[in-house]
View 1 (spheres, rainbow, N blue to C red):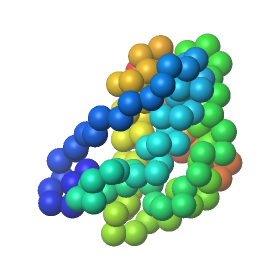
View 2: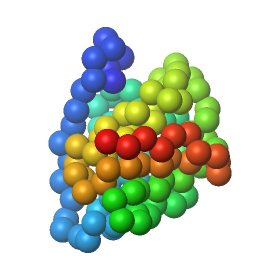
View 3: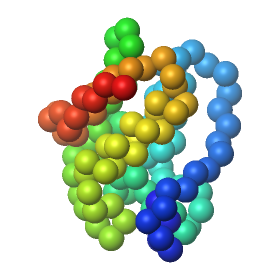
View 4: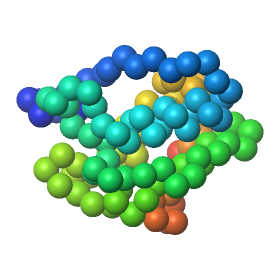
Length: 113
């Protein structure tokens, strides 16, 4: 999201070829680093780490550190953040139909597509 408006913005990033599990892990870690452009907001607060990322069939499991619970002027809604990270993953990895996100061990959501 932009600081200037509530519209969603996108960036293009390139990754080397790797298997699906490595690629989705690298992708999520890159999302957690935040945007390249200083006029865009981060999905989660700074310092959020990926604790685990694995798939079982068509379900992806993501575990984020407790820092993902922090809200500030950039990140105000945990559920919206989960929705945005899920949207990014589904758009780039079409083989998943369910994404379960855990923050500090507690499940935030496990939506199917």
